[in-house]
Image (cartoon, rainbow, N blue to C red):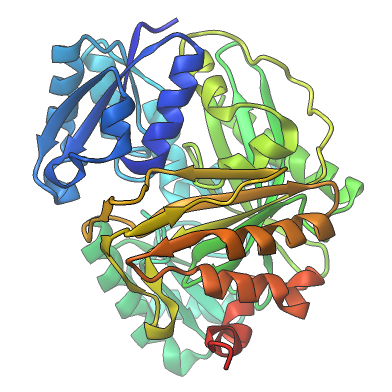
Length: 452
């Protein structure tokens, strides 16, 4: 087992990794930018190193500084968390070349699945269903338009590299296609330094359903069930739950088997997520694979009792998975991402000092956060300040617990998304489980209205 792990990240995920390491009797190193000097992950780690100015480009994304921090503190492994360099093959390679274990998949696995076009080919080769689309990036706009005509409108143009909704445009007819194509390429180049895009069929009202994957170096690959992440805004997840409200045992078996088959095709090692689109007719299609721990991993942890971060660390140390059997589900779990944003102003970020930060509690309530009263939410990073996760014996109980938890979560000093999330919990459509990835586009206007 490792002696000391450096966490190449910040915020709540850095704290989450520190806690897992403590349970495994592993020392930890926190890295921080000048803006994060007072962050809790710096206080709780055994060692800490400042790696640069506030900007992520000058700190958390600087591979050389992270490696240097590991070397001067004697860290023998690095956990990348999520975001920043978590899915960067060059970072994983540099760790290996420096004699430091990267707690995650291999550089080749990251590279294969990080490029959407190569990921689609890898899945197609082993019979995992994919959305009809171009076999690879398409450079010529006219050629792309002809392909779009072949598969039928509407289509979506997607960046081959990256994610988070950037470099994505929907074209509903040929007249709209060329403009959307150029916009997607331009945005992809700006966001990822790679303007490659591909074209695929656009599904009007699918669910976003992802399967949690674990693999080890002993040839074991398994899934730990699904999470429904359909409530999204601009391709960013806001609420996740498990089990998926429309999932049947037969459908879970088919989707789970396809997810495991896809992961086994690349001999996947570590924690990862196979993300799929589930259409209204029960058809499902591979969308992408995230080769890292997910923001919403606590949903699966509460549902199954499996500590995913500890499993990541164990697997990276060469140990086999603790179990290869899917444990029985423990009721129903819902997660809300609490962001320092103002929903009434188009979700504009709301950085500032937290004058009051009172967390809810009670049976089945979990909070993952790096925030505290007196903490200043910086303007330089993602605006998420907490993840509120609840578990109930039934979905109805979980919904009620989430409503109560949101009402008793007191934050003053910044605007948050909690009032908006509370209205989502009370919406008849959400309570009935009748959501899809475009649901908020239809219901968002009403949900944004403050009660009079």
